[in-house]
Amino acid sequence: MKNLLIRNIKLRKWTIIIYSMLLLLSPLQLVIGNDTLLTKSIYSAVAMILLFVSIVDSGHAFRFNSKLGHKMSYDFFASLPVSKKALLNANYVTVTMFTLIGAAILSLYNIPDSNVSADQLNLNVMVPYSYITINFFAIPIAFKRYTEQKSEYISYLIYLLTMFIIIPVFVILVAVGLIAVFNFNLRQLDYLEPMFNYGFLVMSILFFIANYFIQYKKVN
Image 1 (cartoon, one colour):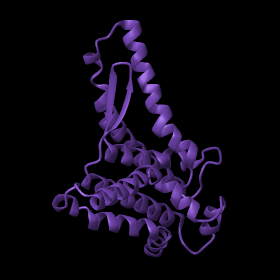
Image 2 (cartoon, one colour):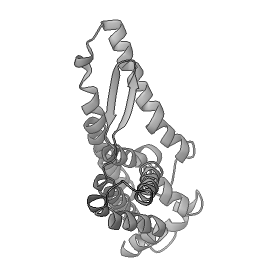
Image 3 (cartoon, helix red, strand yellow):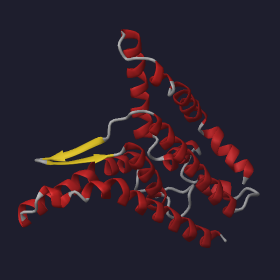
Image 4 (tube, helix red, strand yellow):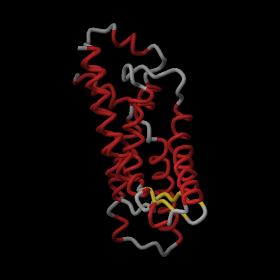
């Protein structure tokens, strides 16, 4: 398993470099003001990198899979003198590690919450929580059989679009429908925001853990 972890980390060396850079730059926001052209340019560049990380890295399992080279990579690695259990454990540890480190780095910066709104209904989605949620849902949704074997009908782009756009829009439409049909007061739908930030997070953790035991039973 140790060698598999090293392999996974080497596959994401550029991610490690970006995370390290963001970690080193994070204290500067406390001592450097945003009042000159130079500092504004630096903050803008950092903001673009954070946006890139929060979106593109919201699917570490997909990114690891793409680095392995081809859709039959699981068959290849399973043929090597390593156990399927070691493959499973290494991939789960790697995804968990990169997800939590990425969320921690995003938490170091004062990132505005994502806002989803329709009519007079607004939902503020906390970026680190949504980042963890989307990453943890990736394995039970797209890698439910084996962590190195992606479901062919689920692409990385479609997954991100579903998580970032389709699901939030669907929830908003349901909420607007409830308001229109049952004449709910907006205050009665305040629970929707905690559901976005905590409910989906808890669900993703439970599905992530449950899928581990399902896959563990298959390979054990």
